Length: 455
Figure 1 (cartoon, rainbow, N blue to C red):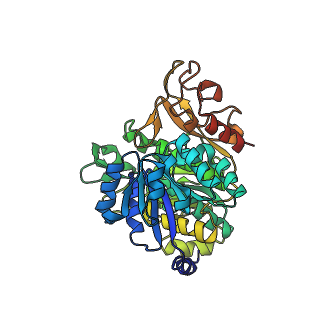
Figure 2: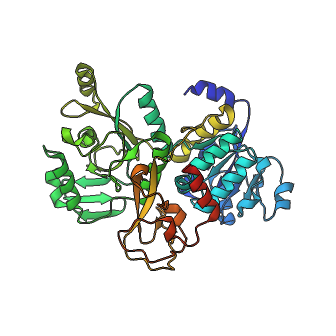
Figure 3: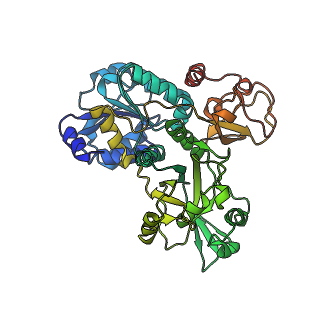
């Protein structure tokens, strides 16, 4: 990317954006960064909590007289052209006030509709709501292309970061064995106490002390580390969702439906994500993955970063790189190349400027439904049950997210977030993969978008 050209273009046109879910954590990082960029401005901010949104903007340093709360279309129309319009209803987002929509509601049906509305009005869309993208990303991308506008993932969020890193590796004609990211929160093991800290939780893990090196049997060590955690959950629905977005934009697919999710130290990734015949975990190349970072308190975090594991070629080249500190497998056949960062909205302006000023997306402009984010019932679910979605990771109650290669999935598999907030049409046994026939009242527009994306 030529940042000098991007900066030069930015110095001319002012890029205006609309932002949904504007009081959320991602939104805060974008709004805070926007104040540092005079040619990037928020035109419309939408959140159900408008008073809280106003307080957030004031806390960040937006001028009070620039913030105009609007309860109806007439008030939006009457707002000054340079105002930051605050609304609670997505239908009040006036398309003539902005160049690009940043969709961050996390609500599949609402996010899909506002994205369609923006595209149909000739506005670009940066999709932060991975829940929307996992169901309707392909249909939205095609819709945007038909309107000659950009539909893009957002830099700073892990899907866009990983898509870009995969593209970088492919430009260099490196053979990708695996690509993925670290999970959200590190497992920090303190050898002095035998405890692991994960975010604000501390628990005893005395058996981990003997497992801090990988040993000769990679699979056995990975399994033993998981056993030490005594059943603690180390996967997240959000991770599966994000990796489904990466899959459709890169063609990479999962090796197993729950992903391997190893508990791993950064220096081990090239050995862990080797093929089974070389002592690793993978049964295929081109696998999409997530790992849990294991580190000591004095080691740097992977920081929600992204990686690719590639096959090496000239042994002397890769031994030289090993000597310079790069992660190369013990047998020299694989190398892990990684970016240890996840800057959220601080980096998103790159995507917004590229879309508006250069007509470029952060991902591919021709995604394919090569993988499907589905759901497998974890308990018996009676007919008539509302499959509620909620929590920090947007879990669907009673359902485990799974990531399936499309070639392995039933033709009528239901995408997980089409099932969110829907009602079950029949009894679903524990362990069963959800299908379209299991859902009684799927959102009609979202369902049509999903089916169109399969064509």
